[in-house]
Length: 182
Image (tube, helix red, strand yellow):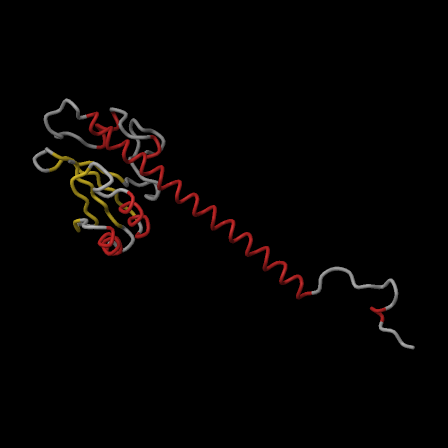
């Protein structure tokens, strides 16, 4: 009687065959991809929450800095930095004289203050935003949730979150959101 070599007693095949190896590596890859996606989503959410908190603190700092002023004449980035009105996470590490930026501006000036309307109001412009971040910011910090009179997205007046989606894509990945104080 003739027996196959692999079927002989005590001579069993050891290890994985090619198909088992491919399936195992595929499952491991899917697991790693899932963990990376969850981490990225958590990081993005944390960045957005931090930005919202810091943005409101920046608004409060601007109002605190100008509390005794009759107008907002002279309010700008340098004045705010000199009065420590800029949260550290919105700077390049030096709130007193660094660049005011947001986490998605790539280190460039991403936030600018300007006195407007005869210096009776001021604007905060948040620039260099991709379409997704533009939508997220507007949806979380619109006139109904912040203390601002107006919100413009790429020069278009905010009406509701639906209009924000259309306006944010109009900026072609370099969107500017402008908040005007009350």
